[in-house]
Amino acid sequence: MHRALCLFAVIPLLCLSARAQENARGKGVSLNPYGIVAGTIELRYESRTGPGTSAHAGLRYYALNKNWTAPGLGGGLRWYLYPDDGARALSGFAIGPHAYFVYWLYDEDREYDIRRLALLVGADASYKWVWENFFFEPSISLEFYPLTAADSPKGRTVLEPVFGIHVGFAWD
Image 1: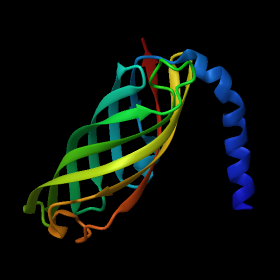
Image 2: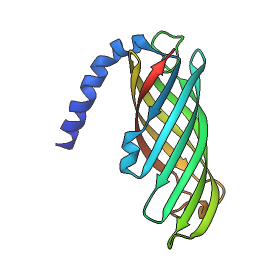
Image 3: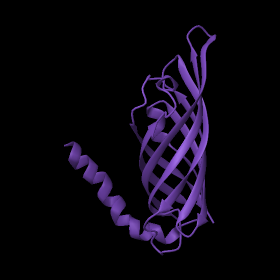
Image 4: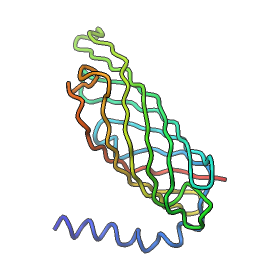
């Protein structure tokens, strides 16, 4: 049943992708509403830097439970491997690294018991569909805290998969 629902959602998107890619834009701002379910809010600005490349900057806010919260600031690069017209970024399949500085706060009794600045690094793969001035971008990232296990609120440095669905507004 689960597979049938996934196919039901993916097939229409693939059918629309040919028309969607004709409207590639050079800049975009997006929000990840899927992350809200997992306790993360992410706002991202992306701009084309070359024929098949872009750079992005983002703000994140983590609220893992009532005690752990963290604002974050970072960015990354992307390479669009198969832009439809061969010259435009911000549409199609992309991969790239990213890094965020995250300021973790642990507050049990309204006093910040733990304050820690941590570096979060990762890489993501995504596919972006653009329709006129709007886009839809499902993605998967692998992220970890490279410095110490103590930087992670889960106390380990293993690669963790992070799923996202960015929706946003694009312009030239």
